[in-house]
Length: 214
Image (cartoon, rainbow, N blue to C red):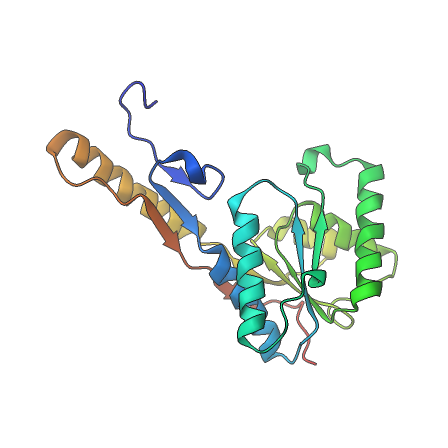
């Protein structure tokens, strides 16, 4: 598209280093928002669950989580973070799914968190659903959860609930892209200034039924 002279824009963080004008969610702010909500509900033993995806958003959410804990006087201990291998949901086999469940349950036993920020959905939601099905955890009585992202169909299917989420600014991202696309066209045809290289939009907390007070 660039070779044909068509202006290109990027949504999200997957092509963060492309050099193209980009609209992305504020992952640090979103993770901090989740931690703050859990602290306000009396939680101190808060964990973070991330997949090892080779993407900027993973580090942004990790940084926001750690910085918000530290801002409230809680040591940002890396042992709080559960890392699991990244795989597209379509590639998750029954064997790897069982391995994720076992790893998750081992983490809960070792760290004993009262709350967990789920830094990405997809396979994590399936793993949580399997742990609930086995009777290993009760949500939110034993473990409060906040998800970053709004995969409501997955939550309903695997967890049978509508949990508290930090919603990504999907609608505003689309609106911003439309404005930037128009600006890019005007810059190309009329000599106006090019659109900004990076537009970062805040996330929003949407309360559901997965956070209990301590």
